[in-house]
Length: 511
Ligand code: HEC
Image (cartoon, rainbow, N blue to C red):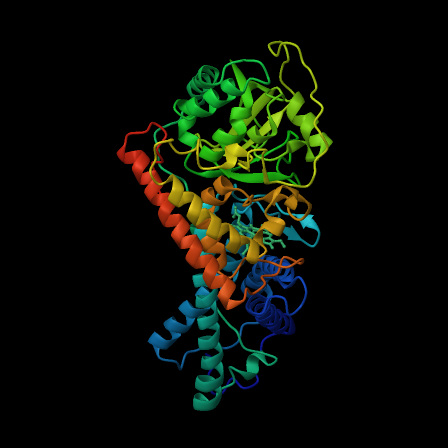
């Protein structure tokens, strides 16, 4: 908004440098996002460069406010235009900060580490699959809003100032031309988490109820007692623990007091699946403790001992594929839940830092060596592991069971054709810290929404550098069609459970 006589009124070098550095970064960001895989690991570079903006833009703003040369502005412009231009510049700066912040939040909500030049940045928010998808959509809108503003901004400089008014505004930034008055960071507040308004959560009561309920559903028994395990699977999920059934959280091994979750291998499970398949492998004594973790979350630890003598089909997959893993399960004596202030599980993990006093005799069980099959058939031809099948998860008299099997089978073929299960199976931890298992009926079922979302958004599958990789149209279509069909059948199975008053019927339609 320089005036026609401001031809020699240019910005200082630092301002010009910062302006064009921003342009270069933004161009690179869009190019890397739009054409993933053109450079190897382009999404990795996109993230790294995006974080750069969070350093650069504040420097720009400070420079602009306190040190930069101000050009002789605007008096000859109509007031409305001047205000409009100021608002646009303010929005530009705001979006240049908001978009990378949303990217950071998105990574956190997916429990992916955020790095700036090798240094891991702090977590702004905890793992939350649904929130991640929402943040990503907002980020997309913000990024395209930013792009639109940039186009308008460049258009104003080139067409309006340079060609129509023939003033010095374009030249003042040449390499030149961005000016804005920036007055506040109020918009940043917009991005801070999602506080749910809820009644105060009483963690001590919850912990006592949880421990009592688990001890009732899954009491101590012989570690090889299949009937006790089946009864536990039947009963678990009806008491205080029912509140964690409807959403996804992370589960993993023992965590250090500080920096938990950092570089730790974890898996994503929906709560109901976690209870049926994983929590039910433990027996509970009713003892518990409540602690405050270094990160401010509350930890509820329930005393729990592992059933290590069951037949292979009772485990979600052969834990003994790794000796360490098997030993860690065998020796664990506490299941721990990190809860936020609303009582939502942020993270669950097994630990051996509890007490063994109620365990009874401990006996290591040696397992036959793992033959590489996550899914297999038993002697009578039945699919295994049996606890990952729909029977047992849904009521035996649920008339949707055959249709479920059928639609799952089609979905499974699609997942295989799209190479999804190459990574999303138990050994996938070699490729990712946070693993989403998709190789069994129940694991696929509880992630169906995320599967459809990731494929539609073009984010899955990825290649070895984690860059999105396009599926052939035929495979993508089959995957989405079979996925939608599978989801429909799952919904009607849930609906039947609800309509027939089954105690563990799903309340919410999110998975
Ligand atoms: C080369 C390995 C690889 C392949 C192949 C792959 N994925 Fe992934 N997948 C990953 C990694 C790594 C992540 C974690 C990154 C993330 O969450 O964005 C992930 C994340 C996901 C998530 C999100 C999990 C969550 O909790 O948010 C879903 C769902 C998913 N993949 C589905 C699929 C589907 C469907 C396919 C096949 C079309 C597929 N993946 C193929 C590696 C892979």
